[in-house]
Length: 239
Image (tube, rainbow, N blue to C red; front, side, top):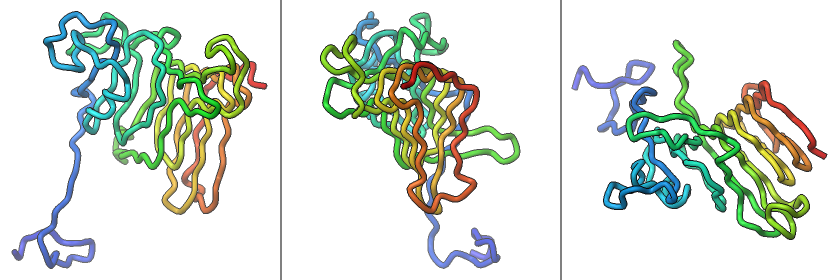
């Protein structure tokens, strides 16, 4: 009609306009728990505090945009692929379905299964939405975890494997914060490319005991605006 949606030049759309959008309220984030050893009532919904998912990958697969995967203490032998606007965070066992308590990164460990080549967490093509007025952001996060790679020989006590990556990030706006990133060939491998490239923020992490701590690569065409932010991290014993 005459009062329909118009483009920036004031022209009416010629056909029906269909779009998708998300309304995000940080105070109302939906959390799903992981940690089968903490289950107390298997009759409760899967992902609740009483009946957590058995694996992080299962929880990510079932998550919706804006969800937080709340990981209870333990060692999780998995290779994780991140999804758009679905975040990972350690969770204290005192957390409930209505009250999330951040966990202890040293007690919440994700380690890829032993293999000649492995990536523990992968993130590719993830975007963020930022309110220009307030600076509030809806973005994927990895927060409060230990991210490790299996070692050669004994997965926990062997030697470093140069063909492993703790976190691999490709053209993604993702916040990696308050983690320990350890025992990998490359702790964090970041690559950007193309005019639409997006880059991550690394903040307040301990990058410790890797061969290479952080590797940042421009594969070509990355604009100056897409730069990796490395803020207040601690680097130690990376060879």
